[in-house]
Amino acid sequence: MQKASIYCPKCKWEPPRAALWECLEVCGCLFDTFETGGTCPECHEKFEHTQCIMCGQFSPHREWYHYPKKAPTCKESETEDEEIYV
Ligand SMILES: [Zn+2]
Ligand SMILES: [Zn+2]
Image (cartoon, rainbow, N blue to C red; front, side, top):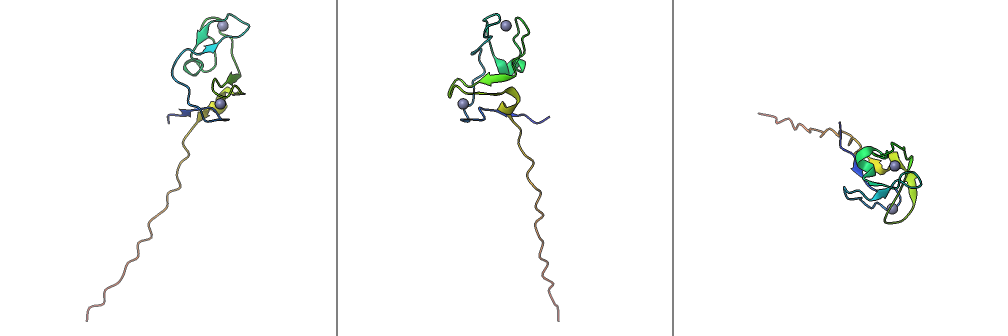
């Protein structure tokens, strides 16, 4: 499994690993939404959208995860210079 880098898809703010997200209108507790995958650990409410604390915009939770794309394997063209022995 590749580790995803987590940052806001809108402003690229990287959230710290801390309980900064409030379970709004449900139980009101604070939790680390990226630790639980957008689910409140207290009432198990699932949040499909995560608000960025930096820019204040909501984005789908899964869009915060950015997986590194596999770099295309470019073969080094080996130029074999044939030496001609006389
Ligand atoms: Zn943002
Ligand atoms: Zn809750």
